[in-house]
Image (cartoon, one colour):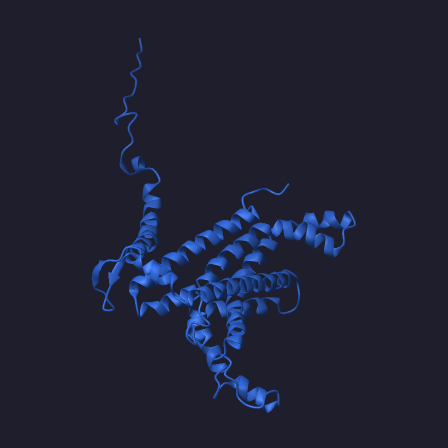
Length: 305
């Protein structure tokens, strides 16, 4: 007569111990902590500072209430700075997307030297933005700049010009540099989007008799929409908050004639830290509104019918 004895488990059933009880927290915890330290805490301090009266040496004197915001909106230069910021953002982002779209389309084709040209495009991205801005500033220098020397030798100008001293010429040059340093990221983002388009789609379009222009407008651009939106949103944030290009080339001068809100914020810092913090809060709010409006208008989360 044989009997079988059931095996007993040594552990307790229905209870999991150790790190498993924490779920995904050990994995997302460091990222959440980093966001709190790098994003949330500085934003909190920025908002808090905008309601304080702080000396130039950094000592808190008293609460300022809304006085710093009233002082900011009474600044005579603020309206022109806001207009300049809008024009700067629209022009730089628009030109960046158009040129990057053309470059991405070019680099998506096979041609001799394609690998070398792709590598060359990374150069503006690899270099420091501030270093690039200072390099162009030296090139445009009134007395020792190579541009004035070259144009004078060619007889294009009678004498040296102060390209960065006049806002009418400083803005186009700063926009050129901003587009120049924004091209690598945007071009590679669009290029990655182009390379995800299946070749069978183009084959089907050719079979249906679609021309090159029809294929591009009805197939390539709609399928490129997610990558295009990513490029626009990232560029909107970067260009709106752009500081190194403008500060490195003109420091926002003369006065605040070539300043955007970010540069104007830094100019205010030397006179009133609280007012500068108030400008930071306004700038932060403008970025959020701008991105949300763009995403809403572009219907980024809606599938194409």
